[in-house]
Length: 332
Image 1 (spheres, helix red, strand yellow):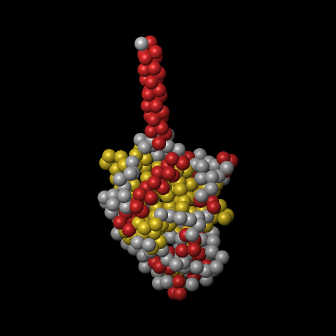
Image 2 (cartoon, one colour):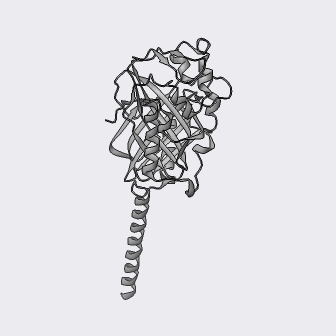
Image 3 (cartoon, one colour):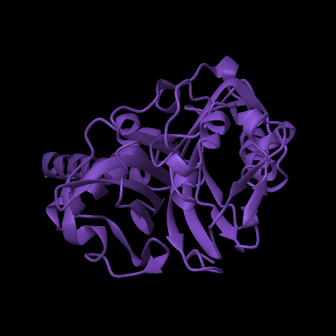
């Protein structure tokens, strides 16, 4: 009898231990203790499910929200319809256990055609509570070569000595938007080697002339040879030319994912263009006085990644989707 009671007691202890282990495991997968690897795996799991067109295995929170290019839609619609290949070589992750969010900026395929996806997931209690897609479906040939492999500064863990605080990372990324709004390169701490890409196209520090998104917004590169001079300027100097003065404001800025280990700030800002600037008065570029601008009124929902090391912005990776003027983000 005593032997039997002892066996039952031991079994009870083991059962409780198993329950405790499973509870601890669930908490580790939950948002409060989900580390960077856990969040990154969640993003991979989500994309894999999307390519399979089967979300039945995803840990979705009750009442989860999903938007694509700011529209609130049902899971299974949008990119879920045509996703045909997961990202391979171009993937940039930003994992933020503090905000319980992960961002993935990647090139994948929809209906077997390359697209750019900026994905944001919020994970709470081990379940996906928020899903946000920004999708660019018209990758221009000029940008394609820069969308094969991410720049190393966007994917590497940086030494602790090169890191700054979360608050400082936010301030630095936010100052970039001030720099645009006020056409002042001194307002943001640009590194000397800073380079900005937009939808893959290099828009600063070009050693050879190349098309930029501004070419499409005007009459084309053949009609605007001045863009070759403007595109050769650094991140800092290009701001001082006022070339981005056609952007009325950047609101909301939504700098919401801060990856301290990689030094990345991942945001989803809204660029607002009233359309009132029809000719840009360029400052400080010999031989370039004005540039025509046939852009707006229109908005652009963007996704932007800033790589920050030693308190300076080194790499900027951006993409965006055009929307009607005064559009909403879907996350107000």
